[in-house]
Amino acid sequence: MSEKKSTSVQEGEGRRLGFKMPHIFVILFSLSGVAALSTYLVPATEYARVPGPDGREVVDPDQYGAVESSSTTFIEFMTAVPRGLIDAGEVVFFTFIIGGVFMVLRHAGIIENALDKLLRMFSKRRLLLIPLLMTVFASLATLIGTQELALVYIPVLIPVIIALGYDSITAAAIALVGTTAGFTAGVLNPVNTGLSQQIAGIETFSGAGLRAVLLVTLLSLGAFWTMRYARRVGADPQRSYIYADESEVEKRHLYTEGMATEARVMTGRQKIALVLAAPVLGVTIWGVMTQGWFMVEMAGMFILIMLVIGLVSGVRPSELCLSFSEGMRSVLEAAIIVGVARSVAVILEDGRILDTMVHGLANLVGNLPGELAAVGMFIVQGAFNFVVPSGSGQAVVTMPVMAPLSDLVGVTRQTSILAFQLGDGLPNLIYPTSGYFMAALAIAGVRWERWVKFYLPLLGMWVFVAICFLVFAQLIGWTG
Image (cartoon, helix red, strand yellow):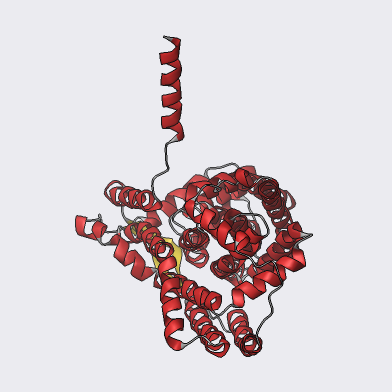
């Protein structure tokens, strides 16, 4: 009897342990279904759009009313994914190109040589590399506002981080947590800070001092949490959340067991290739920082870098093309995820209920006591970020409503912008509707639920910091 009971318990435990989170496509397709159903339950309303900063259209909070319902039809639901792929075309093709370029650089021997030098440089102080890189990534993101650069960092980081004894989650965290800390604080970020301040009618980039303190705080916590996890994996690789994943096993074999014991030496052609590619990379950075270049321009410049390095290093044109194709195939799922994630927003936009959601959330904030209004704005922005994860897209929809609302509830407009930044940035690394984030996880080979296990405690710490900063800003009547 007891043996049967014991066996039954073990079988029950096995079934529980054998539970697997549904594939991310299942999760996103289900969310699309919920969005489609919402178009039948939520009344269709709309704010009027008027010209705003930088030629963008923004909502007019004084012109709001009901419009003709546009509930999602069966055909519209079934075409939401391809329409999402078209709508997110820049990110989709940027992901393809990054995968192809990285594979060509590997074929040219550049990645292995760079990896070898980094390993020997940081072999005795490997943990130091984590805060160093995160600081660089956060600094770039807080100045130019491009979280999507994590898609570029991750493929380069993975071989280095795994060869140092860590895992792909560590590599993804260095890029994603670092860029998100910088983007969220937005010290001089034109995408979230500059645009929202222009919409709110206050001096652009004012209040940089408090945002700089916020940056240091978010980055310090992010680096601490990433180093804590990395130290644990370095001491015992089996404590990695993805230790037994097939792709992770392959990467450990490739980047650790397969590494040369003797120092690698670059050939003359490889050195010339890097020298010729350096100015192209410099022009790319200049274009992003000063000319408003984004994914299309960056993708084109990366193709040029690939051609220079590949051909000068001695890779034959046909081999280069084969490597490029192989690299694109390796990130196929990452690219498609972006479009599937975008389908949720496509359905809500077509259903004309996004403005209804904004209006309803704003009313919730308006009913809160003044002391809690700033925190309420943060929660509202975080909730809206689920359906509109784009920083600029969220700014032009919510800030024209939240800025005047802040005057009514006794919150300074500068504080309402901080609430927007925090709500727009922190959830980006957990919402499966965030296209660039899901693409980054796919490129890293990390499943969403494994990442959530790593990130959720850090998100809790970051949310606590966000509330503390908002309460402080409210108490001092922060205007910058």
